[in-house]
Amino acid sequence: MKLQGVKVIDLSSFLPGPHLTMMMADHGAEVIKIEQPGAGDATRSIGQSQNGHTVYFRNANRGKKSVALDLKAPAGREALLRLVEDADVLLETFRPGVARRLGIDYEAVRKVAPQIVYCSISAFGQDGPLRDQPAHDLSVLALSGALSLTGDAERGPLLPSIPAADMASSLMALSGILMALLRARQTGQGDYIDLSMHDALVSWMAHLTGSLFAHDELPVPRNERLLGGAALYGIYRTQDGRFLTLGGSEIKFAENLLTALQRPDLIGAARQPAGPAQLPVRRFLEETFASQPLAHWIEWFKGKDVCWGPVLDLREGLNHPHVWARGMRLKDGAGNDHLGVPIRFANEPARPNFDPPDLGADGPDLLRQNS
Image (tube, rainbow, N blue to C red; front, side, top):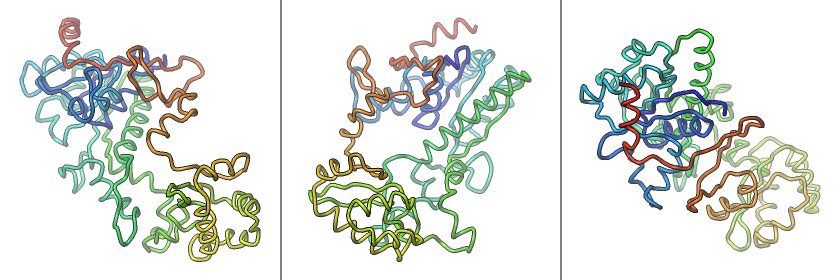
C-alpha cells in the first residue's frame, strides 16, 4: 500500500484530524492515536453505538492503534517523545499555544525527530486576531461568510448537513502532509504545517467571489448561477412532496431538457445570465415537475443527457446500488457497516482494517518497543 512504512502520531479528536489519519491508515500507514486516559476521543461517546463502539468513532478511527497518555504529566510527555523519535508525522488539533505549554510543540518534537512532519489543525490558525477564539465547524462557516449564502431572507441561514470547514481542513491538511513527506524523503528534514479550518474554507470560495472582487458588491443568491439564479441549477418539488435537482447550467443541458419537455422556445431565456432573465424557465420547470410524482420523473429522465438527480434520504442514498458497486459502503465480518475509501489506486489499493481501537489497548506494547 502507498503509505506502508509511514508512522503517524495522531493527537487529534472529533472529525478533521481523525478523518485525515484514518485515510492514511486505510492506505497502509501505522497510525498511533494518543488519547486522554479514562475518556479518550470525545466521539467514543457521541451518537449511537454498535458492538462496543459508536458508529461515529468507528467511521473516523478504524485501523488505528490507541495509547492512553496524560500529556499534562511529565511521564506522559516523555512517553510521547519516545514514540515520536522514529515517526514520520505528528498531527495535533489543540487550541493554539496548548502544545507549547505541554512541551510537545514543533520545536520540542523536532529536537528528537528532525524528520517529523508536524501538522497543527485549528479553527483560525496559529496567528491572526481570531487565533484564540474557540470554534467548531458552524462558527467557522459563519465567520467566513459562506453560511450567509444559505437559506433565504425569511428563514435566515440554514444548518448545513456536511461540516464543510471540518472536511476542507481535513483534505487540505492531508495534501500538505503528503507534500511535506515527499520533500522529507528528499532532504531528511521535516516541516511544520499551520492549517486553519477558516483558511481552508475561504480557499474553496472561488465560485462565490465574482461580484465582491469585481465590483465590491455582495452576491445576491437568487441571481448567482450556483445559488438559485440559474434555472438549470436548482431544487424542484414534485407532486408527491419530494424533490429533484437540476445540476448542470451549461446551455447544451438546457437545450436537451427544454426540447424534451416540448418548450424549445424557452432556450433563449436559458441562455441569459443567471437571475431575473431566467425566471420564465424556472417557473415553467416548477409547474412541470410539480405535475408528477418523483417516481415518474426518475423514469422520464432515463436516457436523457441532462444533469439531474432525485433528492434521496440518507437510507436511500447510502443504499444506492452505485454506492455498493463503488465500495463506498462496506460490511465487516461482524455485519457492521462502514463508509468506504474514496481514494482508489489501480496498484496497491487501500485495505482498510475495520477494527477501531479500544482505548489504550496498544499502549503497553508500543511503549515497551520505544523504551
